[in-house]
Image (cartoon, rainbow, N blue to C red; front, side, top):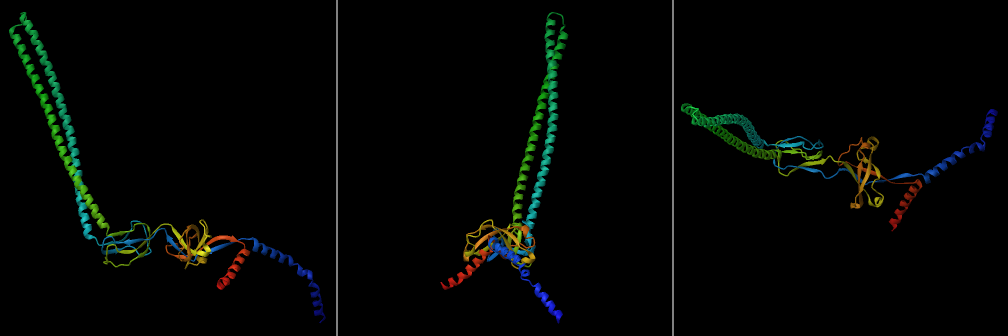
Length: 389
C-alpha cells in the first residue's frame, strides 16, 4: 500500500505546469502558419464546363453513291482508318470494264502503228540522205568531166586558130590542118556530151529529192492521222475509265469512318444514296460549353485547362492538357461555347476520337482560401434572398 502511495506522489510532483507549456510554441507556430496560408497563399479556381465533346475541324464528309448499281464487295467497316484514295466499296462493272479494255487495246494498236511509221520515216530519211550523197557525188563528177572536156575543147580551138595562121604562111599542110580541125570537133562533141551528163545528173538528183519528199510527206500524213486516232481513242478510254471509277467508291480524304451501312454483296445501291460518314484526319479540338453566368468575362484566350473524358477514369487514364483558343459568341441555352486545342503529348493514355464526351476544367484565377471561403458563404447567403425576392 505504501509503495503505491509513493508512486502517486512522485507522479504528481512530475506533472508540473511548465511541462505542459512546452507545446504552446508549436501550437502558435501552427496557428501562424495556418493564418498565413489562409489569408496570403493562392489556390487556383477552376471553372468546369457543363458539357464538352471532341470534334474535328469541319463537318464529316458523307459517303455518297454517284452511280447506282449492285454491290460487289465492301472493303471497310465503321471505325476503320482510311487514307485518301482507298477503295471503300466496289459495284459490279463488268460491261464498263470490257468497253474500257477494248478501247485501251485500240489505243495501243494506234500507238504501235505510229511507232512503226516513225521507224519507216526514219529509215526513209536515212535512205534519202545516202541517195542524196551518192547523186551529189555523181553531179560533182559530171561537172568535173564537163569542165575538163570544155578545157580540152577550148585548147583544141586555140590549136585550130594557130594552125590556120601557119597554113596561110605555108608552114602547115592542108592535110594536117584538116586533122587538127577534126580533133577540135571531137573535143567539142565530148564537151557537149559532158554538159548533157551534168544536166542529166542534176535532173536525177532533183527527181530523187522530189520522190523522197513525196514519200516522206505521205508517211508524215499517215503518222498524223494515226496519232490523231490514238488521241481520240485515249480520250474515249479516259471517259470510260471515269465511268468505271464511278463503280469504285474511294475515300476523298484521309480519316475515320464513323458511320457505314452494312450491306451484303448484291445489294442494290441507288444514285446519290449516302452510305456513311467520313471524318477527316484533321486536328482534334474540344468544343466545351460553360454556364453563361459564371463564365462570361472569365474565359480568355490562352488560358489552360484539363480535359477528362467520360467513361475513362482520370485516375487510370489521366487527363489531357488543353489551351483555350477561342471563346465563341454562341450563347444558346444559357451556355457559352469555348474551343480548346489539345496538347497530344499530355494525352498519351487517352483514346482521342471524334465525338467522345467529357468535361473541361479551366483555371480562371488564383485567390486566397479566405477569399474563396467568403465567396462560398456569399453565394449561399444570396440564395435565400433570391428566393424571398
